[in-house]
Amino acid sequence: MAKNILKASKTRKARFTPNMKNFETSLSYEGLKLKEADRYLTVAELKQKYAR
Image 1 (cartoon, rainbow, N blue to C red):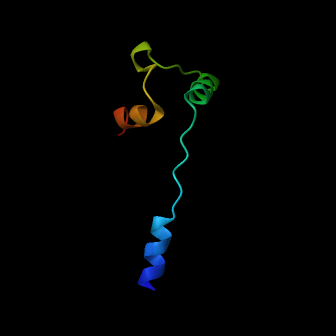
Image 2 (image 1 turned 90 degrees about the horizontal axis):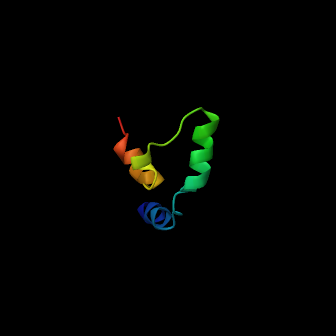
């Protein structure tokens, strides 16, 4: 059974990462916008920066 668990963990797919343009559009629907200093960061970097 342990071998099955190890096989499953090796075959995991990469996580979905959204397109930055889509993220900006989503923010605009909510009435928000990115700060000029944050405009060139990736979504992963923004999540890390604003993690609580």
